[in-house]
Length: 328
Image (cartoon, rainbow, N blue to C red; front, top):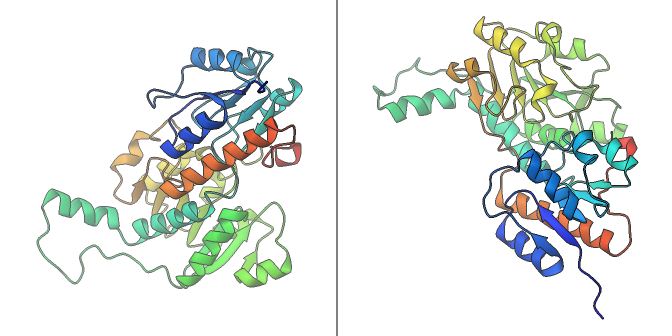
């Protein structure tokens, strides 16, 4: 007699090939539309499922986990970040949490460089001129930006994505510097030609570009607070493709308005979906809707990792991408 298939509830629409495979392997309940689940819908899903496939738009806190059914044994997150899940409470309830690390590395690093170029070369301003039909022709002093080559890049968080950014930045002729919780091994540091700064304050004060690539944890909340932002050079640019909470967004907005920073490229926001409304009207700010990992290839690979984690769990083994206490 065939064994009962795992009940899997998916909270958002996923690439079609991923959804098809999920339904082939499990008793999968998919979304008919792509709106985020309400809190009530998440409660219902967590009461009926053996496995919940969540995304970054699902805030799975202690209160929600407390209402989970006895069946729920795995939250297989579609994404590398897991700060939206109370992992400690899940563990105390015997619920495992897995993620999809490494898949978005190259795509996110590409977007970091795109944002750097967008801000420093004033691409957004040039696009606006063309879209409005107001271009009067080429002029020697029109829309002058600055080149990336020769600039000092300070990478905040030198994990997979930070290192991928470093490799790309070196190809543009940038000088790579970094601050990390732990210093890289000498051979990695040498390969990246990266200079380590133990003091974040000293690094940000000397950089031309800061790229935020660290995860969101209690220790990184407002790591770039008002005081640290004020250490930056007025000619400096800041790029964030990690989590909005790492930067004090109100302080950043004030400094950009006052001309105390040259510009910002943002893919994530502290304040809601679109960040501080005042940022939208600034010509020196490039804003994207959390597109860092948005490639077809990357999202399919994320789905494949989710499936591997669920299948491994279903076979009685630890999911290969289980989130463990050392990661918190």
